[in-house]
Image 1 (cartoon, one colour):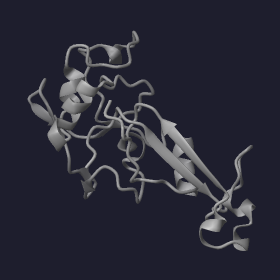
Image 2: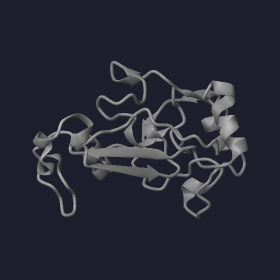
Image 3: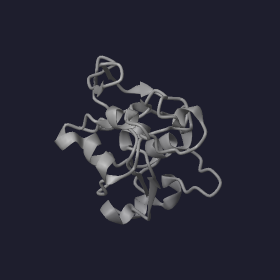
Length: 182
């Protein structure tokens, strides 16, 4: 189960030529219908594989609420997961974050181990709340150690419409994981 939402690379794999979307292609974008998909069968229908890597984002940060994806666990419209928040003594559930700048947390091995917390995957908020726990290093208020942690925030089509459109029109891989613990 993926709980921390910021800190890993997100691969968005687009397999072009696997079906028809009926959507006219944008400038420089090939639609599946323009590939002549009917001439080939199976894997031979795939003409291009495009992999988009987003550094310092998890799958759930960008696609955790994408319809049909194995993302943020929810039941009856409510998230069924949360992470302990040492600063408040409560727990923090995933929430929609409309901000384009995110503070995140540190990107080092020590922080990754604390985030993963021996497999419990519940250290993300605590890591972000540590002194110097932010990774953005800029002067934006969200980068201050005293700012509320934003590691449980997720984005959707409102902030990243192109990614969601590509995921809708092509193929979204929801079981690819970053092998680097940092």
